[in-house]
Length: 205
Length: 205
DNA sequence: TTTTTGATAGTTTTGTTAAAAAAGTCAGGA
DNA sequence: TCCTGACTTTTTTAACAAAACTATCAAAAA
Image (tube, rainbow over all chains, first blue to last red; front, side, top):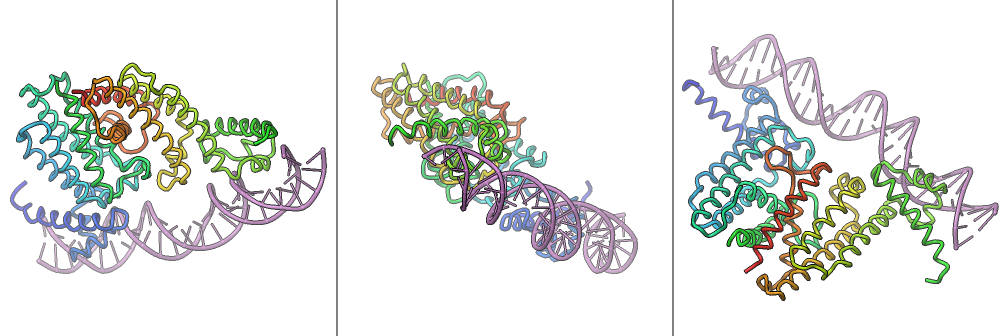
């Protein structure tokens, strides 16, 4: 709690940074604790002094990324001229987040089934923030009188987020299921914009 | 082509039926050709007389299921009072199709990545039929003057189908990614109805 | 007392091989 | 043309050793 933690915190930060790079470029399973330690010119044992194990180190990096994302959302809450701006902002921010960290999430793709609970805590936090941003935007918009009053805005936003999550690449040609490939993300992004366009109109009088 | 194929076709049908039951109850990887042959009191070699190999037998069953589904869609094309009826019909039919054959599709879940191309042909056919049904319904509705003219109805329907595909179980509590579990299908179904409600309104004037 | 490390213990992944099980083939019978 | 038993080939499974990696710890350094 005292000032003495400063140096420790800085070191932790360094470790998170180096780990992020490794995880981002090589994925979870193909980076070893030795390599991270090597990048920082420290011993592997020291990593274990700062973090209890590999998976929790990964989580810590992920939490940091999530926090940055959350902050971005929170900083822009209630700053939108209309509902569409809010939705577009959310889609763009989310898109950038995914594109910039695409390889980092191979951990998700690999384990697919039973991921550690802490992951779902973080995902839940992010989801809650998105829900908050967008349902407030909806409430504001209702106040403006542009769209119909909604009993439960969160339910509607939750639905939209699910729907957005379902957008995949070109129907017939491409093979669905599985994770979207990186080269498709831009096409997906464009489709999402079209979807919210229709969706918003669906909320109007 | 001649009448002599009748008996062969009946036998093929029997094989498809028995295979369907096995695949449905035990999944692809846990049913053996011997078991199917046993169910029909025939030799395994005879199966290979009618079908080239196991995977193509599975495909044949799948194609049969798909054809039944397609027929259902085609029989009801252009029979809807309004657009919503058409969408609800599609969602309900699809829902029943999935619920009734849930275990059959474990083949998808297992392989997840690189599935045989023939699968995608069938998926493509089904998708095309859904696209056709719904975009015709949209065109009809435009004719009625209820909704705005759309340059490319198929694009819009494609988008909606993707969105529907993304609907999953309750946000925070439940763990996303991965296939939906059977016990969640009804909840998903309800959410889909809500989505098309908003979506259709989004297409109106 | 806090931070750091080399050495080492423990666990998971990888590679190998043999046995078992299942897929797939074929010569020949009805 | 339809069908089968016996056979071959391929795939899955189990067991186990080697290698790679995670995680720990006593002790040195700061």
